Amino acid sequence: MKSEYDDGEEWGPIEELIGNLDLDPFDPLARGGSDAAPGSRAVRWRDLPPEQARVEWDTLRQWVEWVTARFDVPVTLVPDCWWRHPALVEELSALHVAWRTAYDKQDTGLGPVMWLERWHNAKARLRAAYPGSCTNGHQPHKRRSWEDTTSQDEWNAWASDAHGD
Image 1 (cartoon, one colour):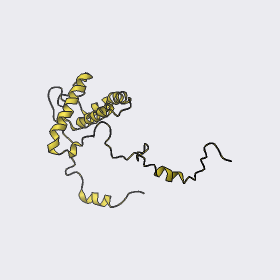
Image 2 (tube, helix red, strand yellow):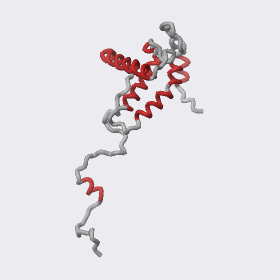
Image 3 (cartoon, helix red, strand yellow):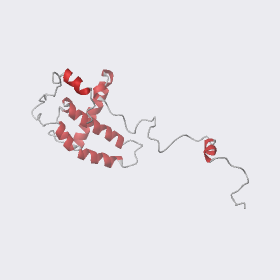
Image 4 (cartoon, helix red, strand yellow):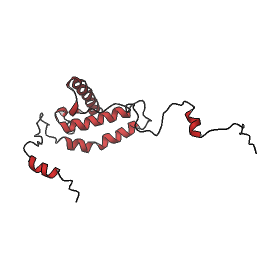
């Protein structure tokens, strides 16, 4: 019996038909695309080439000054010498990237409220990153060092076994 949709033509496998359509290979479920993420890329301070440092530091400084004024952040949370506290730099830098991503033109509209949630949740991490010691001027923090703490012989003996018992 012939249906109203049957034109009498023989059709090949659906994969072959689709392949012959010359469609854009966009796959909405693909997660490994080549396009940059919305917003911006994160700054890897550890690997930042000197020729890019000034631009990145100036950009972060402008944002930190804006966000701390906008949200009336006390100096006990983000001091004037924030840039001299490496853990605080990492926290603020991550928040900056999240902020730029939240306000990217590709955002669906939820970005700003999600960023505000992250900002308010980050306050505890900001407190942990800055001990509050610079209220009367910057006080250098004695940073942890691994120099002369690990015996290379002990390490080599330990690292030679998976320790999966």
